[in-house]
Length: 488
Image (cartoon, rainbow, N blue to C red):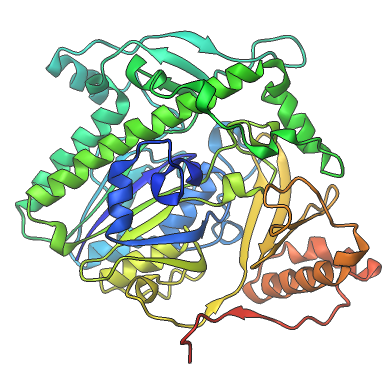
């Protein structure tokens, strides 16, 4: 079984037609979803690039693999995986898989994708490396103009300096964009692999739609800002929330940007999504032309989401909202019927799924469950809750989260905790942690989170032990699990 793994960076799930957006053109991903399994509750283990990508590589939660922060803004954590860490490409190589990775790596400082056996240009960092020699050669070979931008969009920081660049016009044709370059290199790799008769794993990791959104005119202006519906959580007041969220809003200069510019930013983000969808379409079309589709499982997902103005924030950070934790997740396995699944699944589960499809032992991916039974339409027992964690970005900031069918609890050891009722408050505007009517829910989730963390050896539960003193961990919950109809 061949494996094609398509991944974006900082991608909101609500920008895809197959996830309910009627305005953004994503015909290629919509077609993939229509012929595969779309997971409606697909989550990242942590909403930051390096730890999430390390979880995919290892099948381990961040607390276990210990690569907890992006190295560009490292806050004292490890900068590479341990030398003895299990990674899925090593297991695939033992089964004679060809291994390719075209695009963003961003897993460690000293060891790159080639260190783990992947073919492809070395593209290690967080941003489009437009000065990379392979990209420069690509442009020169085709007579395409170099990277140049104008019309930057940015706000003003609290100290009066210009804020981070959020978007700009890119003065290149689409063929010269980094996204088109990546798709071209992926297609070339696909063509080489097709001639060998050996199975392959080929990943294409796009750098977008991560900010800054740098797009040619056709995509920068593809969507009318007047038609953009602002996220409901733009009404965020931060009342009863951890103060770090208000500080992050100031850091990302939200209140210094006119609301019409916020609409434009969202419209440009949508244009970025469409550009990437077109490049994914090129790869999928070539897969079909090469006659490989019937022998290739295709994945599409992202490392985490993006705020784009939701909760008066940009980028991602120490706020465990659905905007950045819920991500797209589509898997197409040849012979499996199209469907939509409602189980809580994670990016980390892709690791065991890859191993399973390649005929490898999945047990070393200790925090990962194979999604193959779900994609094949089976109804195994499945956990009824989802865990996520965060450890900091610009500075250390530990967080732990559990969400179930209706509620989400976030433990912030250095600030106030959060509890959201996602049925009555889907935009997570009202922190109900202190509301007496939700005390049983709060205690049930607190106890469940505590027990699950202890079971898997996550020392974050030590942060929670003082909560014994306030009674939050005295509640004896009825431990529930998601058992779809037909489970035996």
